[in-house]
Length: 105
Length: 189
Image 1 (cartoon, each protein chain N blue to C red):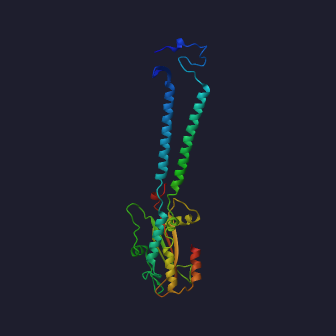
Image 2 (cartoon, each protein chain N blue to C red):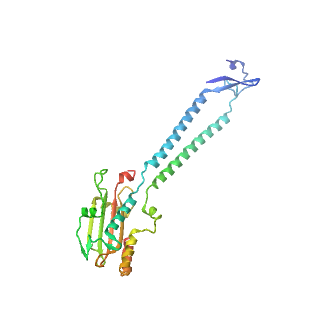
Image 3 (cartoon, chains in turn brown, cyan):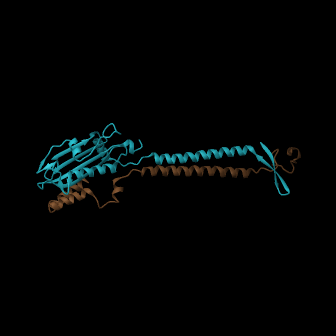
């Protein structure tokens, strides 16, 4: 192995560390470090966004009747029963009954 | 620690310094990033798949539909319940047998369902002509809270009301309440 410490002339390589062939650039090192730090923060930020999104998505897993009924709006069983009864009585007291049912809803 | 390495490109030989300490730091950094990303992915999967599908509201809706079908068919009230204006007193167990519904399950120590059917004559909407209750009535109190503010962890209640006639064409308003608990299997407690 070569011994560069002996052959190096400090007048020609003032910013070179002992035992090194290439000069070290301090501003270059700072720039690179900042890039890594920002990259790390970006990665953590993206992960946090995904965690929040998955938490929000997990709340959508509750299935409500309204979601199911949008696919079969026309087949409302209870309304069908009421309309059958209306037909049997020729719509007697329809307005009164409608008001009572509306209040319950 | 700085070490000299010789690289040959054609006729030329270059001597470069290899920084072993820096390499170690970068390796640790990459390992840390790997752990963070893996932890994040684990967290996402755990949050999403750890939350069960809550189907209790739909189940309660199916229960009320089943009761409605049993109580009234084609606009006429079931003759076992009201016949010629006279209400037959019926226990919850008999009602469950008639409909037919089975609230008992090996999976649960106590019944997870409750139902209530009230028949009101048009002339007297304050007092029900017939009141049938079945299941675990402990869940009934939770429905009052649910009506004020929706709570995920409490039992889900569905109320339905419709109009029907008996054999003698007497008019009735029928109010059904279906309650399903099963919180442990439908909500992350």
